[in-house]
Amino acid sequence: MAGKLSILSNINKFIKAQDEQLWTGTLEDYISLVVKTPAIHMTSHTRVLRMIESHGVEKDASGKIVKYNFFKDEIFGVDSSIDEIVSYLRAAAAGSEVGRRILLMYGPTSSGKSQLAIMLKKGLEKFSQTESGAIYGLSESPMNEDPLTAIPHELREEFLKEYGIKIEGELSPLMSIILKEKYAGNFLKLPVRRYLISEKNRASIGTFVPSDKKSQDISELIGSMDLSTVGQYGSESDPRAYKFDGELNVANRGIMEFIEMLKVDQKFLYVLLTLAQEKNIKTPRFPLIFADEFLLSHTNENEFRKFLAKEEMEALHDRIIVVKVPYNLSITNEVKIYEKLIAQADFKGVHVSPHALYCAAMFAILSRLKESTNKNLDIVTKMKLYNGESVEGFTGTDVSNFMGEYHDEGMGGVSPRYVINRISSILAETGTTCITPIDVIRSIRDGFKSNAKLDSKEVSRLEDLLTKVIDEYSKIAKNDVQKAFFLNFEEEVSNLLSNYLESVNAFLDGSKIENDLGQLIEPNEKLMRAIEEKIQVTESGKRSFRQEISRKMARSASQNSGLPNYKDHFKLREALEKQLFEERQDVIRLTVSTRITDEGALKKLNVVINTLCEKYGYTAESANKLLKYVSSVMART
Image 1: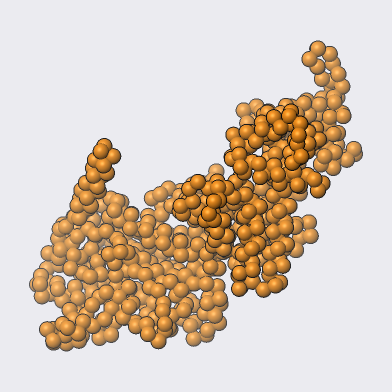
Image 2: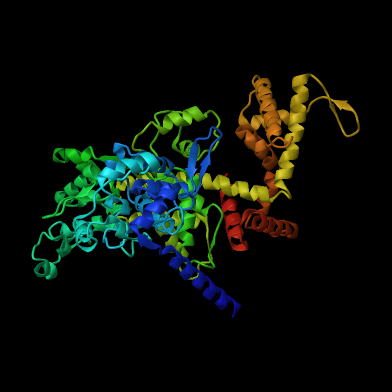
């Protein structure tokens, strides 16, 4: 009962908040309001920009914005595209000519173009419900016109000088007649209301979807004549006999989304061109109708290339700001995409094993990458570097250089939609309680057969990439199992690091080490070389390697409360882990064998399974499948 009352209480609060937002008054009242708070008066581009910034930003040490929080939980891996969109909005909000351009996003299917548009529209709706995002319009205008457009041009200079408020545009033909006939020209008496931006209610958000060119009518964009009222007003050119219900009309002061913009008939594009260039909607028999809109469009790459090739569209070419939206190229971000999409579905009771989504993401990213001209950079290493991982032999500068090697990298390959469809097909199978990386890899491979877009050459390429994914997963799987054999892996590897560093520093200083008995002994050369040989450090190169390790671990210690972190050096991490694993290799191989009969080994196996469940996110079922897989891998090596 308490829960029910709580729900009712929240509903009543919501209704009350809605009522409080429905401010009404006259233009005279509104002028007092806007003079007191000039920030109320915003252009469409400014409103979208402020909406994005109202969610906060993340900055780096130099103060540069690196992430906009508005997008961070929904859109992943397209930060550069988001930066371009925000830069466009910022320039348009500043009043530059950029505001008279159409923003066109293009890229492969399922790269996030539609999602970006949806987010901006929904974000604007919610922003209009806040005090900082409040928007006011002329109550009798079907286009929610800016109330200040009723102010004569002779008075606008004073507004700009006194309050910094720049007034653009004219009243629509309809509002001009209403002002003249109903209010005798007294613009201060025009009624004004606060309204909420809403796509559903067709208030400051318009969306146009192209259909058959032969049947689609331009009236869907610019409205149409209301023949039933022509007799009443005596003329087809009387604005009162016109329905201002086109998508461009209702989008005034907000966002106009043009889906697959380049697929429409050219006459539609010329209407957009006029709106972008002059901020006016051209309607038959009427003067130009002023409209302030953020024109947002998107299309696929093929249509975009065709559009660029049409010389007759040159005028529109110059009125478009192009933002490329490629596929994400980061494994970490790709996993976030899958997690978000899976969370939206109802797959309760199905356990997604560790690394299952990671393996799917590796395959997707590999399919989108191009082989580097750098012979030392294979595609798997390139994938890891794109993911921000440290790889020996490559610096941050190197990464920046090869990231710009191909202008169209990320514009092809496997889409997130394909991968999530293959994952969902496993999750939806009757009786499925867990899916493993191998399940995901098999499902992805099975999908090749039913995909008509893939020719034999492409299937062969994708098969090769899956083999690389399997190789990477085998290393990850072995690593998880090996770690599970240690009571506290992090502690043991830290102890090994401490012993190694103690000997390294003594070696470099020419000093000795004091053992537990207080005796001074030589540095443990056998231990140091055993570790170093794991990563091919030669006898002649050991001194320079040890000097490097000593410096880097001292720096690591200063950044980690006095304790060096072995993960801060990629090669050292690899060497220490290999040293520990080698010491237990025979025990591990015996324990994970499927032919275990020894009671002690069985107990050890149960301990390993418990560790995998408690520390590494497995269930008993997925842990057993992992051990079975690792057993088969170790049997082949």
